[in-house]
Image (cartoon, rainbow, N blue to C red):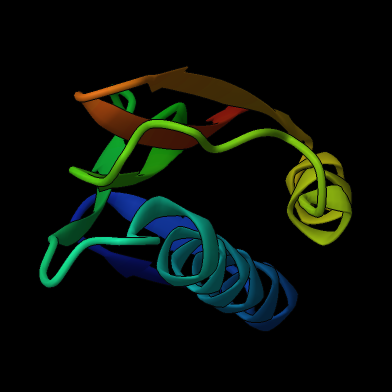
Length: 102
């Protein structure tokens, strides 16, 4: 197990986190920016007082995202012992957050 930035993870957790980021970023590119010439995707990961972490992927796209097609991200969140939270609002964008308790 290694610790980076106050977040401890095993190799299995690191792989699951990487796959989740890839899935959520890919989802942003495929759904958030339809009809737009440019946009921004942000990825952040924060320690939760040394007791777990939150991983957030957000975009400033059209806000028409849905949970459809996020089955892999949901499964990865569960594998990490957490859950996925999802918000989307037209004209504001979309946020997907995986929250894992310590």
